[in-house]
Every structure is written in structure tokens, then in C-alpha cells.
Length: 127
Image (cartoon, rainbow, N blue to C red; front, side, top):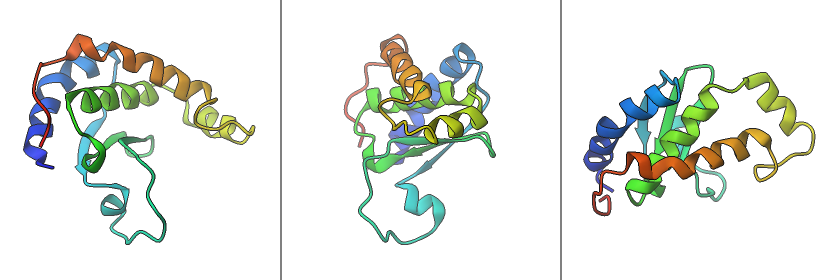
């Protein structure tokens, strides 16, 4: 996938998303989590679009799974929502036998993703 197109989408939509969600995280692109961690996969990777790092205040977008503008925008919104959530509570809730589908922070972030059309650029398929 050509990262230049993804970068263009980010450059056009992220400033407004960041403003709307009070997010000042830096965005970095990697093909997948293993490239970001500079390691070789010992397991089959699940489909991960993005990740927010509280400790670095960064949004990592994983380009191997971003197929279109909607994926990019949804991922940016999702991770911006996480940037305003409490990391300690985020982790504590996972210790209460919640999974991704039942975690309140993930539910909130996925709910906000539905606003993606507000930022739509009408570009074609990425890559």
C-alpha cells in the first residue's frame, strides 16, 4: 500500500479531527505492529488498524489494514478518543474480565467512529 495517499488523507483530515477531539497526539505510520516494534512475528497477527500510546502520546496507524479513506478516518477518530481516556482505568477495566467488545472505552471509541463521514474527502481506494 502506498503510504503517500494515507499521508495525504491524514494531512487533510487529522487537524480537524484533532481539534474536535482535543487530541494533540503525533501520528506515525507502520505497515504493522511488528514493523513498529522492529521484531519478527512469532504469532499470526490479528487485524489491527491502529493503536494509541499513552506513554508517547502517539497514534500508530498500521497501513497493511487500512484499505480506504474510511478506515483511516475511523482509526484516527478511535485513537483520538483513547487519547482523552484514563490509561489506568483503561487497563483496570481489562483486568475485570472485559474484552475488546465489552470494554466501555472501546465501545465509546467505536461509537465516535460513526462520525467519520463528517471528515470524508471523497477520495478513492487507498493504494
